[in-house]
Image (tube, rainbow, N blue to C red; front, side):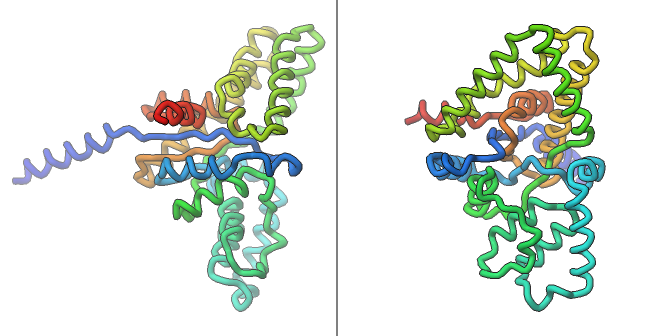
Length: 306
């Protein structure tokens, strides 16, 4: 009898491990210009994400466990969070805040900033005693797409998967590389980048920005630019460091997505990241054995079935 139970347990474990994790990656922009925001078809994107019906949503935010990234990117927010933690411990807000507002404050005081913003955005109370800690999301992908879709899905908390330690050094090296490309007359990658940016602006004005940034042309342009830097500037340490740092960030993000799916026993995962990340993250997730679809591919498949 014990032997049968052991065999059944092994079979179940094997089947669980063999089941592929399905992942949909939505490429986003982090800021929509106010004058063109009303032209974008945000509701359609929201409805598409709801129809995918993920178990969890992973976002481009830093996990509370990644203190190195937090200290580099959000030092001021962390100080404000520490102050808020002291106020919460003293009971200062107990009588003037709702449960959902207090839960958001708990997230914020523990450096889980975007989950705090989500709860505060979701609160229907007219007065929020934590409004001075709140970050306006009205022009971001969160306020226009991610938060509304999560509420429709009944998802109450996001999985933070970003990695940003070393970003200041990355930006410094990136600026040096761009200057070297220009001064060494390596103009083709610069021209390609400027051409894509010109089209980006046009699509923003035409109300097709989300569709455009999820097309392979836009996403692959960033992938190609980064991966080719050491070939364009073979003697440049900065070029190699830019490529290595970008790949490291995307690889860690992919691993955190995979680990979040495993921890939450999720078979369907929605990932929202800046569109420049999509191709590299997809490649790393596929190496981990995941079944990955980009939002651009999702739209293409959807149009073929209608």
